[in-house]
Length: 378
Image 1 (cartoon, helix red, strand yellow):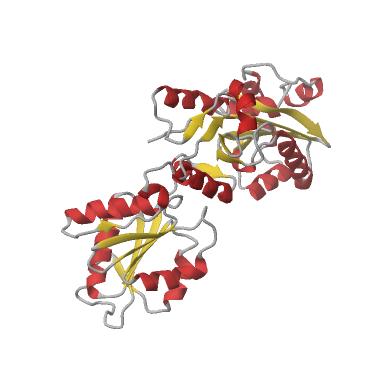
Image 2 (cartoon, rainbow, N blue to C red):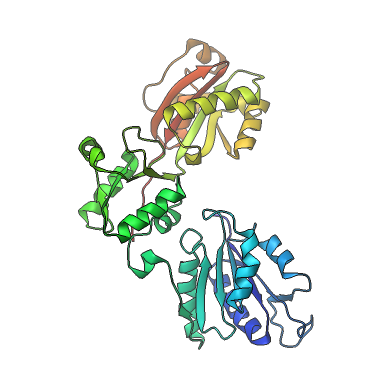
């Protein structure tokens, strides 16, 4: 897991001390922190300047331009107006914006301003409130998101905690609106997720407002539903048009190819295959192939474009993959195993389920498998 980064900025001596406490709390939680103070009255070498705090001499806008793209959290210790005006030009997408919080300089209030759910600002506010109170601050968390205030299921919080990609933020908002209106929304999942949803359902831990639907019961439920939530790596063509997909990164793309293949040939074929199979790009976590292709330029270039790592297996390892596969005598003669794409995908997913069988075109074969995964409710 990558180290989380947070930038903390303050504007007065009192705020600087509060910011130092905030920075220390988050450091203890494993965050990499960058604390700074911007004030005409505080210079480098000031005797009250905490060791973990630098002095910002340039424009606040330049500081924000530098920290927003690289930090998971940005905290202002000062007036809310300063935080709002500074953050506004850098707000882009709810799915990628950092958590933005503001505290008054005395630490009386902790207010999440941006990315309360997906970015974790609400969770961070509650943590800071709890820890600052131990240090003598009032630290009242000011949470304003409707699902939190009303104690209802928040789909974006659930997605963030389970590392799920949200397919449509408008539908995510509609889910929250329906739940706040006391409506019920069907919930289903791919076979891997369905097993754990059944477990949570037996324990009575499916959140209020969500109605778990097993695969065999979907046909009778779909005609009555105008909104649906499905957790999985693949679209279900039978579900309503307004289906919110929550996608785990749990699929592996197996690729076989002839020597000297162009990256464009690989990319075009894979894109076509995934589209036909309804597999989300966001579900892919790596590419698998045979070690004979570990230095194949076209394959490596495609992987780099997709920002996916490549895992290689020997022919002997591939032959040990359990199950039945689409065999090829030619592939066996060239590589030493009868199938590369399906076998490598299955091995890379720890004997996972094939969701896209071997599909070959213009010197490229592609297959896809999904590993076992689960989701957790609080």
